[in-house]
Amino acid sequence: MKRGRILSGMRPTGRMHLGNYVGALENWVRHQNDGWDNLHMVADWHMLTTGYADTSRLQADIFDMVVDWLAAGLDPARSVIFVQSAVKEHAELHLLLSMLVSKARLERIPTLKEQIRDLNLDEQTISYGHLGYSVLQAADILLYKATHVPVGEDQVPHVELTRELARRFNFVYCRRRPEVFLEPDVQLTDFPRLRGIDGGRMSKSFGNTILLTDSPEKITEKIRQAYTDPKKLRATDPGRPEADASDGHGGCVVWEYHRKFNPAEAESIAARCRSGELACVPDKKHLAEVMTEALAPLRERREKWLANPDAVRDVIEDGNRRARAIATATMDEVRSAMGLQANRVGV
Ligand code: ATP
Ligand code: MG
Image 1 (cartoon, protein in one colour):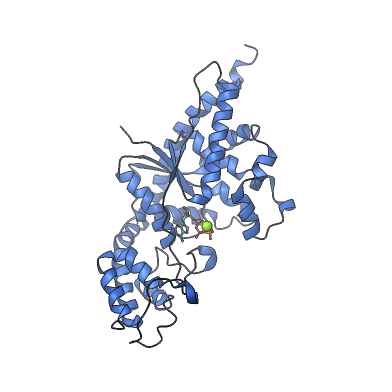
Image 2: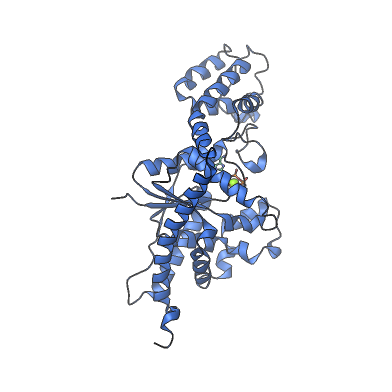
């Protein structure tokens, strides 16, 4: 008996970094190993909302992302890994649900407002598809009757909309029959917001990432540039691992990484830094070694998969098949509830 079903995906927009790993992938793998039913979707149609004009790298990005997921520990025997556009039912349900929500409701979604602001978009020129991407997200979730959606705070409004659409559909079409959709619960993952090497939130848009694919040399080079206490100028100056708002010090990134990837030593390292005993240069070198070690299992798994690219494609094909089986069964119920079965014309 499974504990529940989670549906979670990502847009294929580049290689996975440590933020993606601690904020999402680790959590997926934990669910998979804790008896959940996992579905993980490569959200290629969602990528089009902002990236429709250049799809030249799309297939390579999909492949790379799935390899990163497998390297992180997703096991295709237990987790369904699939590509959204390979399951056309997403588009069909999106269209049907789009009748049940007003334009004004979509315009009020805070995540969309933020995106418009962050990407400097003009609200008047936002595409019809972009406006409706949260409806597509609702379709993604409802198709698989996911019981839980693991999300960060920022995504909660989308799950709210999903619940509303499930309720609305059941109310309009299922009054005299069993309800088709269940309302999924938000599962607030306390996503540790991992910072990038410059001290800001790690994000591929900010160029401050450490990638899961970075070589040991690359990791060493990036850690060497990582943000530390700006007041620790000489090796023997006492350092402040934690943030100090009084002078805008956001906290030492090297220590943040120690806590995450080297928890056993983190406290003693901080103590030696505070006393001026430990200098940044050797500390960073040590951290780079520890992180290289921590990422070694991922590197090994990646190499194993990359040695056989056809096996990766098979994982995706198999995942698509398994996803399709669930999605087509749900759409049969949807069409039947809505009276849309083409084979019953005139009956
Ligand atoms: P973009 O810059 O294109 O927004 P990104 O680097 O922020 O990319 P996303 O594709 O937005 O990455 O995020 C994918 C997943 O990784 C999401 O679940 C998100 O919450 C998580 N994530 C991204 N960055 C971080 C971070 N710095 N710390 C924790 N989780 C993160
Ligand atoms: Mg992001």
